[in-house]
Image (cartoon, rainbow, N blue to C red; front, side, top):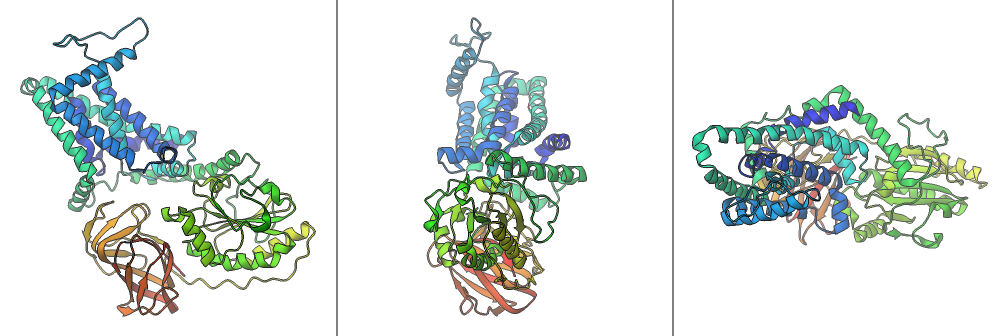
Length: 599
C-alpha cells in the first residue's frame, strides 16, 4: 500500500501537465486574482473535498438520487459560468462577498467574529478562503485527468460500490499531489500581480478578464469543446503526455496492484456476504479435485428474479437449498463465452435437477443496456435458459464472491460449502463429474456423462472493445475524441486485432456510434466473429463484407445484411475454417457497437 500511495502522490504531482488538464487550467489560474491571500487555499480545499467525494461515491450518489451521471457535471459547469459572471460584474461580486462573509462568520467559534475588512458600505468582507471554495468544488467535478492504472483501480472499485480504506487513501494521496502544483500556479500568479506595478494597477480589469475566461471555459466544457481542444493538441504533438502515466507501469506498482486486487476480492467477499467464504485462490485447481472453500455467500443481490418455478418465491435464499447441490453461474447475455456455456448448463440441469441439482444464474451486466429487465427476460427466452436467474445490476453478488470473470461457475455441496469452481469455457466433462460427486455425497445416484466435447476454439484474436475505456488496436489517422462526433479516416489496412473508422463517429466510454452512417474495418484471425450491438432507432442496418466480398449467411446475417431489432450479441461471420481476414461493416442508422468476440 505504501508503494501505491507514493506513486499516486507522484502521479498527482505531474498530472497538471496532462493534455486532459490543459483546457481547465484557466480555472486554476483564476485563483490568482482577487479574494485575499487565502483564496488559493479555499480553491484547494474545495477541490480536494469535491474530487475525493465524487471519485469515490459518484456511482452511489447517482443511484441514490436517481439522476443521470452527467447531472452533477452540468451543475459544476453552471457554477463555473456563474462564478465567472460574479467576477465580471462588480455588483454581483459585492453580493457574493456579503454571502461568503455570513458563511465565514457562521464558521467562527462562539464569541468571536472574523476580523472585518469593511467595504464602502460598511459590509465586512470575508476571508478569500470561502470565496475560493465554490471554484474548487466545481473544479473537482470537471477534473478528468488521464489517470494511470493506480487511480483506474480506484475508479473500478467505485463503479461497483466497493470502496475501501485503501481506495480513500490512494485518492487523497493523488489529490494532495495534484494540489501542490495547483497551489504553486495560483501563488505564482498572485506574486506576479503584486510585483509588477502595471498589473497591480489593473487588478480589477484582470479579474474581469478572468471572469470572461471562466465563462468561456464553462461553455466550452458544456459543449465538449475541451475534448476537441485536447484532441487537437495531441494531433499536433502525438507524443505529448505519453510518459505521464508510464511511471505507474513500474514493476513495484504492478505487483502492489495485483496484491491489492487479490486481497480486495477476498475481503469484499467476507464483508458483503457476512460468511466464511475464502474466495477463489490464485493457484490453478487440479481438475475435478474437490476442496473446501468455506460457506457459500448468501444471495445478497436485490434484483429481479426469472424462472423461479416451483423452487419457492422471490427472493430465493441459499438456506432454502440445504440438501441440494447448487451451481452459481455468473454470466451476461451479450458475452459469447457465457452463451457458449449455456447448452452444457442446460444439459446438466435437465439431467440432474430431479436428483437434487439447482442452478442459480447471476446476471451481472457488462454494458448498460444489459441492466434492462426486459432485455434480460427476452435473452433468457431466446437462449433457452430454464433455470432461475437473478439480476445483479449493482454487482452485489459479484462482490460477495469476489468474482472477476464471465462466465464463472461455483459448485456448492448439500451443506452449503463451496467445493469447486471454474472460470471460462471448457472442461464440461470435469464439471459434470464434480456434480456427480457432490450428488453422491448427498445420497443421490448419478452416473454417465451427458456433456458433449467442447468445440475446438481456434480464434487468434482477443476480445476487442470499441469504447475508449478499454479500446485497443485503433488505427484511424485521427486521434480519438471522447464523447464528441468527429470525422475519421483509416490510417492503413488493419492487422489482426486492429480496427479503424471512416466517416463521422462518436467514440463513447463503452461503444462507438456513427452520426448517420459510417464504416468500421477490423482485422481478425478466427472462424466466427460476433459483435454486441444496441440499436437506438428502428431501421438500422449493417452491410457485412469479408475481404471485400459479401459475407456468407449466419444466424443473423442474410445476404450480407444485418438488420438489428434488439440489444444483444450478433454473429457477423461464420467461415468454414479460421484464417486471417479483414471485416468491413457499412453501418447505417444509430447503432451502438460495443465489442467484438471471436470463435
